[in-house]
Image (tube, rainbow, N blue to C red; front, side, top):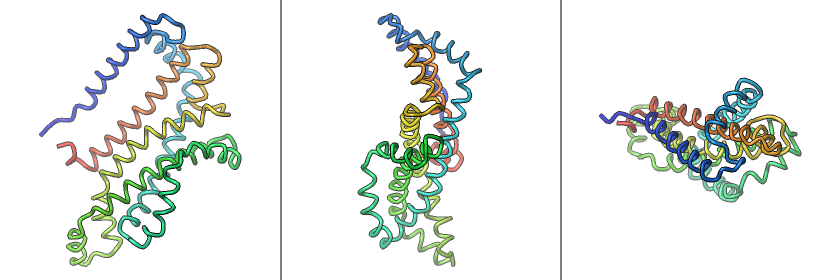
Length: 248
């Protein structure tokens, strides 16, 4: 059995990034690119003060968006993947909306729902929803009908088939799409918080940039990276828990 060494590899990856950062800072010698130790020093100081609140607000927004997206997209994707009539009716709508950059809806959401949490959560949810939906639908289509027939012959109902055959078969793809969607969610979170906002890591980062406080700006970058890294590891642990055969 091959042991998973993702955490160790991630540690070395971070060291390599810091090394390149240090080399770039030493070569440029410009205030807009502080040395890593200055940025981490600013982060250690800020996280005990206002940055902690912004970090928690951003975490709340992105986690809630991911959960809502998952709860909405997975059931719909499973049904569309197995019900040709439903898929034929809804697929044109998906094909029209999916390619549109969802960030263009931010001014609309802000106009309708204000500048607070709701507009940002809706935007992130919309982005991740379609990524999970399309992946889940395609995964449900590829489920071997012989598995369904064998379970049906044992007296399983439609709900049992979805819960015990189709959903488990699609779960690895669902979790993969969620990990991929996480990166997009973090990017959309930053954009939404940097526009007409007064809370969140995106706001903190852009506010530091406007004040030419580059060490604080990079502490915001570090905070955003830590947020993404924590959520990525959580999703990876969930995949190891529910799909252990993928790590053998």
